[in-house]
Length: 124
Length: 169
Image (cartoon, rainbow over all chains, first blue to last red; front, top):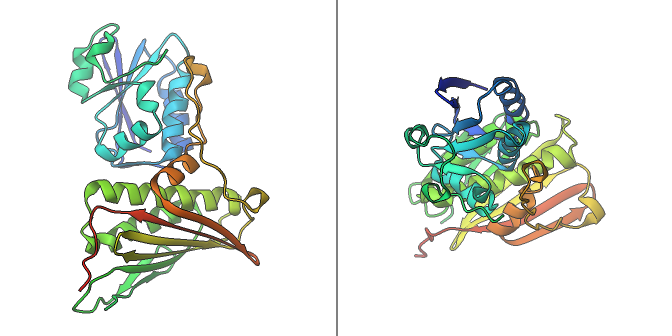
């Protein structure tokens, strides 16, 4: 599982370098994310721009990666392809993540983004 | 006329010779149930469905439903043991794709099709569900979903509707 990291100010950007986040790599993904985000700043952005396919195991691993960050840090998503976006939309998990169109717009958002700059629709 | 496209083998290597006047696509794959073979089978299946000229949206729906069904067989019917075989049969009909998945693993709990409620999302991060989405997606994206235990075999049949319809001549 290829995950590349980059620190940009108060952001940790993790780029998934593979085209599938599925049952075959879900556990590996979650464990790698735990290692990579151990000393992460308050915002972690997961760049899914290369990912063409994500199944429910992959979705569970992304949610797990978010939970691993605890309540003081936040996992945001960027660059969802239509097939990946569909899984988040159908399961309504698009409402619990801040989702950026691409990594550039994630970089432009500094501090706590107001909700109207994202597609997030928090129900709480 | 029916085109017969058969794919078999460890990673589902294609043995195809579609006739000249191909109108419908039919695929059959038999493969071991471990996760890497499931992944390879899915990729071969999607390549084999190329002749259906599906939209990207339909392709991603088909790949997602098949992935959920096959991973469920791998994880639950065969309990993550790599020996079991999965048989996948797909045939194009006028409204989409008819699918049949057969395995010789454990039966479904209570011999019934699991229900597919959407796991509830919570306000608190720590309470978010990480699983239980698979059957929701299968129920939500398929039609005529049916499970049957036949001797020592599980048989799951369903249909996936596609926007691209097969023209009848």
